[in-house]
Length: 488
Image (tube, rainbow, N blue to C red; front, side, top):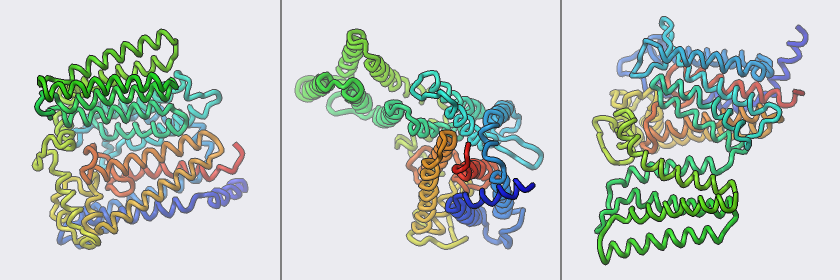
């Protein structure tokens, strides 16, 4: 008993209290926002358990109690039982796939009488623990293909289960773990490839039907193929250390493009994309020759990037039109400006933008928002709760909330960097990545800057599963950080 008494004060003294203060502040502002989003004219008691604002107090209270329990556990518990926790959550995710209860088209909820839980929210901390456990093992090397593939598998497996539950938005959150991989030494080329694919998709789809007059050349494929050639040249210079070949590729690519544009403009209009395809095929052949001739592994990898880029671009349109669900396709088209659809897929975003804009500089005041009180914004107390902040608290309040999240991100970076062991650092960057992804995407979709994928704003969106999930994610890291000065 004396040992427990001696241990508890040391944990409390070692806690990062600035992070806890930020956490409590976010909970308070989150509850105020839930009140504003769920309040209807004529309600007399916002503390009633029959109201969402009253139930959110219950979730907040249980979250704080849960956080306290997590702090009282030995920090070694999380390292020792990381795989066990991960396997339990995987089983829950797998069982949820066959859940007969479908809520808003998703089978991601387990219904236990009056209680509804979403295992996907808890799988985040379990996945973070498991990947931290694996990457902190003796002999792990992220540059070894087998080790990196296994770590990716730990992250992607729950993601596949969540996709099978028809909860694509929650599944996409797991892509944020690649920020942690990058911090731990993942080659920058992998991250660059991901960014390049996004650029190909956005440019290719957005301008796929726009022509370069007077030739019948679509701007999308024209720009994407030129980018593929330029990116390839840059990789040859960076990873093969050959400036001459890099400039040679750029000279031939840009030269052939310019000559084709001039010929189509002044002689005979034609589709320049065919010339660029021919140049790209020649470039692929050249890379294959260099790979076989020099026996340099990097040339093979660059060849794979170039071929993969072309294949991805020409398959993106097929996936969008034939693989994605109709509502997902409409959302992407609305985001890219191909469709307006203010009465359908674009309705939520349009109404949230009106709500935020109506708040002005200082907002309309607590419980005085009109767009939210008249329920113009669907999901305004969950996925679109940030529009309530913008309407009632204005630009000043919105900026204050974003600054609080920025302060949390900065504290998480500082805490992760001071970890003496890889397990704590990897887990810390997993936590950081998840929070960063949620805040960036949620605020972005409310402002119409990112796709509407239906993920909550941490500590603000109504609901117990998300609040418990984020609390567990954060407080496990706080406990690990509190033990940073203790011997392993």
